[in-house]
Length: 323
Image (cartoon, rainbow, N blue to C red; front, top):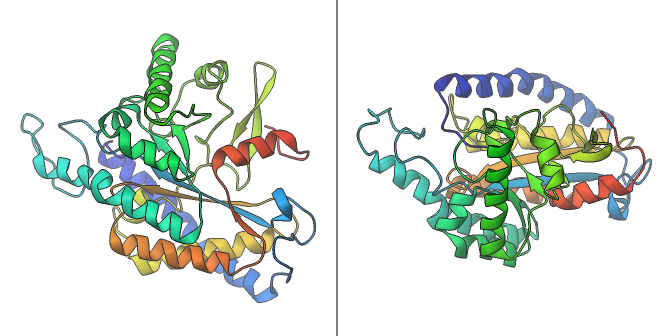
């Protein structure tokens, strides 16, 4: 998800996050009081809902956007600047994503043994192909995130298809991997998006926040997987207007985990976390993420999964919700 939209978007995101936080904390405390069922490692209580009998799946996104932002008018931590002037400090803030953020996050994933999905803007890949290549070489999924910083919702079908083909080509050229997952700019595609993606060989998209588990939607008579995204656990939300401290972010992640882990004893549950190169790649935020990952890994039956793994699993098993 890109963050170069007007301030009302930030207000919406902040409201969406805040609206559920208090309820989530109260619900998590109540569930924790009941005590989740103890189980052996990699064994789900009440039924195997994930591969190898895992109880709860956690899926992390690492958005690779730095380098695709517009030269003028990109949003960030600096005050707005008349777009007729080059905003050099803002450009440096985005540069942090490729120079420091992603390298630091990659080291975190290595230390914790976690594999993630990286949604890559094609233009960002074209400008830093060696970094895209390293992401895949270290075991992570390369997924599509549009070719440029341009929203898809106003595109014609022809424009959409051309943009997605270009995004595929950029990723394949740099990494040798063909993406099977897609994330639209601000999650907003068109009524034609899923049909175009399916035609191009995609298996899933993430532009939906309606469930805490994967599900399918019919596209031209075939199931197309939705691996839901998150606003609650999204770093743009949690570290933007108003900013949330790293300690509070960690507390929220743990509270959400506790609720989903308890629910996962009787139904398929998935926790989604979204990180962006220039935001979650800072030292303190990486520390908070590592503390959360270690906390989650201390519980039996927790599996960190790439989104392509989740999508393929959803196509192979019964009782996946179909909308």
